[in-house]
Amino acid sequence: MLAAISVLIWIIGAVMAYVTLTQNTKSEGLGAAITGQTDSYRGATGVEEQKKKLLSYSGYAFIGLSIIYMVFAQNTWG
Image 1: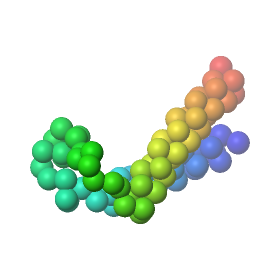
Image 2: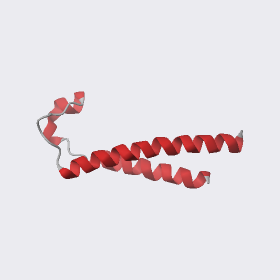
Image 3: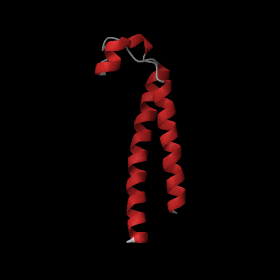
Image 4: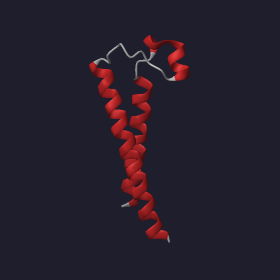
């Protein structure tokens, strides 16, 4: 059980890294890269919006599975 959860955590982590690296930030300039600000008058394109949602859901799944892993590992070893 712990091994399966561990593999899922690694896969989700890899997905998060891939989605983060493929997000389009070229049009936002260096200021956005440093401060994290984006122009509010520009709407996100469909693909970029989907990447943001996927990254958000992946983050929630990563945190949730990490907590579940911690609880199972503590009950197994403790």
